[in-house]
Image 1 (cartoon, rainbow, N blue to C red):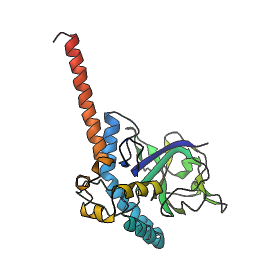
Image 2: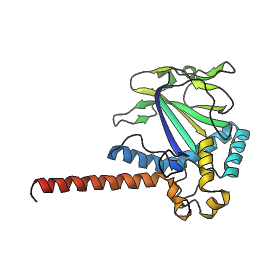
Image 3: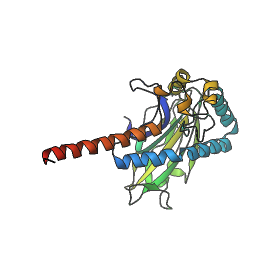
Length: 260
């Protein structure tokens, strides 16, 4: 059965009332989670550029095909904040990351474009509850977790690899999946993928077309459909406003109880 942890970053079809397209929300609430979310989103433009460059080096033809899909449909990059300040070239709308023994069934993805790509690596947990690259953090620290193409009977045996392992697959065509793994204490393997998802693109088509997004300069405030979109900054602003509201309510109650 599926295990481990998966994180999503970028843009996806909304399940929130009144919204059509939204940026992924943080998994947890609280000041610490919000700070991590804010820092992560500030770095996504650099991450998107890195993934674009790495795929181009690994498989130029697939990279060109993926970029063609993104440009044609004005697919908002997972690194685009939609703030008009630093608009990103269209790219994949979704970046996923997994760790801590993540595994799943053989499956095909519901993607718009057939190209999926991602690097995998091992990390070591640090004293401040983060993960880092260290000489002793390598795939041998994690037993199992092979990435398999079931239809072809082939896979990637990470335990026999070292450092960064880059994988390309046809997500909507190939049956693929990750096998169960066991981490050494304090270590884990990160698996990632970038994809243009069908639901994400369909949601974008409902709130803009290629010309409208370009004319707006990738600025949500210049889109007539802005109320149907939630950006990462919208989530950050709301979380901070909710925190202030909570503090104000608590102080008000305290004042009433103390007779102030």
